[in-house]
Amino acid sequence: MLNIKIKKMKKILYLIIILFFSIELKAQKTINKTNKKIVEHLNTPTKIWMAGDWKTQLNGSKVWQKGHWRFEEKCFQQKSEIFRKKMKKRQQV
Image (cartoon, rainbow, N blue to C red):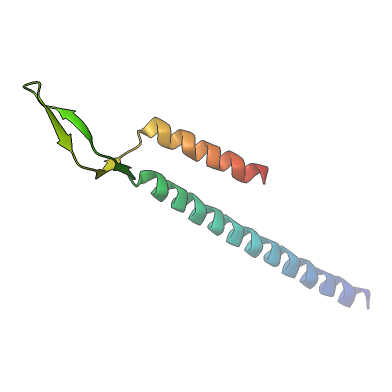
């Protein structure tokens, strides 16, 4: 009788351990996905609308340039700083 109870308790313990590890694995996968999304977002250039402005040419004359889109890429230091801030926010929540 006692032997049967021990076997049942072992089975329940094994099921709990397997359940715990599967939940932990799923949580780790979601963390990796969010980190990947953050890195992809950091690697994309920033698209900025520039209103028209005067550009100085090499000969010194000024020419009006119409509004246009300007793409600006972040340097590695800016990317790592933004990533660090996002990771710090996630840990606080």
